[in-house]
Length: 314
Image 1 (tube, helix red, strand yellow):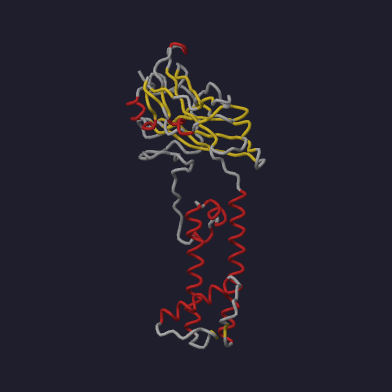
Image 2 (cartoon, rainbow, N blue to C red):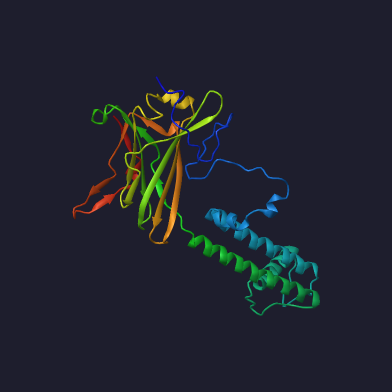
């Protein structure tokens, strides 16, 4: 019979227990929290913009920079066109408005990044003021982008690869005929991570709509080095909150493993962290992992990251 009311102490990691109606996972596989903040109107003005731009994914960051650069030059090009046909000296005659806009846009780009090929130049006080403002905006824009690029490249970030699924093995006579919960990780980078520690919680929903959190005792919760993979193992014995629990019961209680790793990156000389989770539907029952490394002809160990995710029944 599965435990519906465990005497084990709950260990809320800061996600809250009063989660009636919340059926989505608490931590996404990429380590982000599945929490959306609702803020009042105008709160975006006071937001942490530096953190937003540093944490933005690379595709979105590049798209935002290109979009910002293009939008500013479009606005300045429209400004030059609004000043009249004589605002830009040396601009070739153009029969259509779109061609005039194209010439004004490329002149704006030259002014924005201070290239100044010398073929075209502003004429008149208004055009000179507008080009001066654009030059200032361009210098500030590139300074901000340069600072953000440096911050993004210099920020230490763990590249810890988690196995696609966790497993629960069949009862093992060598371990008291108990099942064991396992998942695997590996370092995707060639850098050295030392003093790597792990902490794993399981969250289980109760009939009254709350969640309870229980720490899982690991056979080994720390490694000195991480050159190969690390299989984390929790024995489901009488002291485990998962003792005698079935797959259906784990599903009914919205079971989810919450995982936190902490280590020291020797390259950046800073602590790094990695988070992830496994929901009940990402746990394979009665499976065993396939060994992900082998020895080559020269006697060197070879870690195959593709095999990190492979398990087989039995």
